[in-house]
Length: 273
Image 1: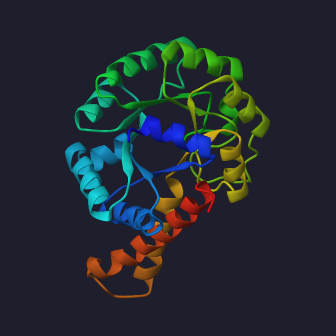
Image 2: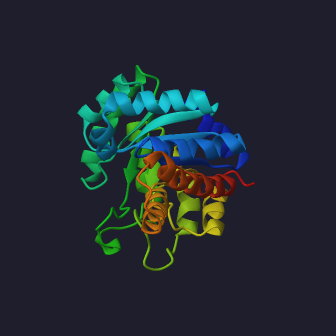
Image 3: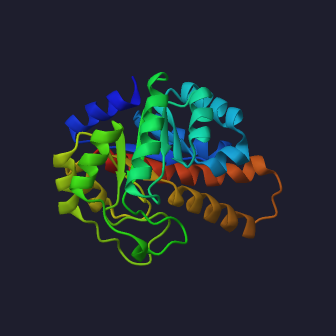
């Protein structure tokens, strides 16, 4: 099933789809172990940094093979693609979905590049995600921008024909210093006024009850990245501090299992289990 069709199915069921970033074999294995155990679908995401680290073909081959071996329904997605060239490379490599993030450019510039990517993706039958509004990236202040406005969201989707739209309703990438105050009423207004699948970036650290409410109000795709990196590295550091083991085949599985536990917890939330 194409990802865009899966979104339509899940929105009707008032369920979400967890989108998880992976960074190496261990985090990929941890994520898919969770999805396999619960028999739930999942999106595997790669950023430019992860593609540069693992290599494009290696990362895609690993993800595709792992999805088959674990028996999981899943899709491969480019997260925060920043250029048309990167998007095309990923589509040529077999990605099911791509994100073009021109949210820090002007509205008109964002529309223009998103339209180009949507037109490009048509021949691949791929899902396209864009971002409108300001979702703070790592190191950016939450005060640098504003929330997505319903009328702008409607205009953006109409002019670009984008499949999915990441919106700014109070989340941010990375961990929160204080509890995020999500604009739930704004989310409802955006959902009512546009047909695009709505995406929540910055899912790490958002209370479970808030994640559930965002799904009730129209969010379908929920991104999870920071918590995956964090739990993997914290587990690894704690284990290495208490042992002299040098066999990574004995050490890494401990951190991989920690990722599995985290992702299982998030999967239950977004699937309303």
